Image (cartoon, rainbow, N blue to C red):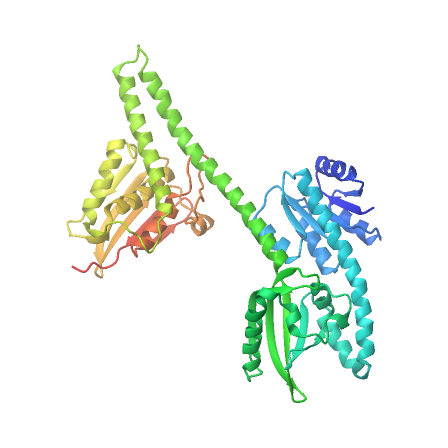
Length: 502
């Protein structure tokens, strides 16, 4: 019976996984750390599969699969993680983890993955024996060029990619060990000496033979060709996807073509699984953030309306309820505007565009804020210029742009700071600068500020959509945006509008 090693620094998880697998008859060893697991392997214990957590104190699960990869161990490693991310996923692919599973682990999924891992392990062990036999046959057939063949074999057999050479008559004249494994041929003579079209399925035959003809018709032997997602045929009539790099060369007057074939089927499947996992995690964060925003507003509205409808409520309570309801409604409206903006292309904006007066548009936006008391406790400092400042864009989009900046400025000053607005013209271009004396931003925040759903606010106090929408709007209307900020030094947002042709 297969022996499985479980690596996890949490005892409860180790015991739970052991219980599930032991019931299926597997022999289980436990390790509480990667060094402990490596020590067991180095001691001579033979394992068929390893199941490892990704995040552990000390060495991680990624360190373990790197160890397996660097030591060329035929040992399938199944990674499990409670926090899937692109960094660990890319490392899992790089070091050829067998599977990447998100916690909590489903029992049937775990058993299925372990079963496939064991099947792969036993198949590779069997194929390794066959390849060793092929090596002996190849050495016997090429005894006259033994030294050269040893050098070539060392190079070709060190790779997991198939390397196949054909001659000008489209006959396969050589193949490395990985070729027999990849195409499932039991003996070299089943592949070598055969026409190259045995590698193509019937429905793809004409297409790929035409491509082979194009490669062979080019007389420039220095050319290299790259083919992606090529469907190839195994000896058991199953197919797989591969990327192929082809080069040609002349030897003793004959032209040969060597292709390096890489099976990308597993990689594509794993990437799709990782993308799906990341998408689900991403949507969960988005839903939680937006849900908190909406629930907070609805709770405030519901509470004050309930107070206002009581028989003993006075005029002040009712007036307060109306103001809270109006403010929260405007907040939800802003959230909706940001969400709707996300679906619009940055370069094919269909909004109505016209020539606007910058000062008039700022007046209009500030009047809305004053009416809803959003900036009630902030000091707005605006030295309005008498110069006629023309910009070309959509009025609603401008209001959304400025509103997001003002709301962020208010939050940065805890709604009690100073927000300064400057408008001017320089070199025939109109400038708008909005400066706050708030807490400022670190370089890390500035690097991520335009990422959707990135927010430095607590959950439920921001969706992280505001600056992402600002970036979309500036790109839609070719507005240059520059941000100047540092911790405890406030922030300045400078918008430079394109020249307006009268």
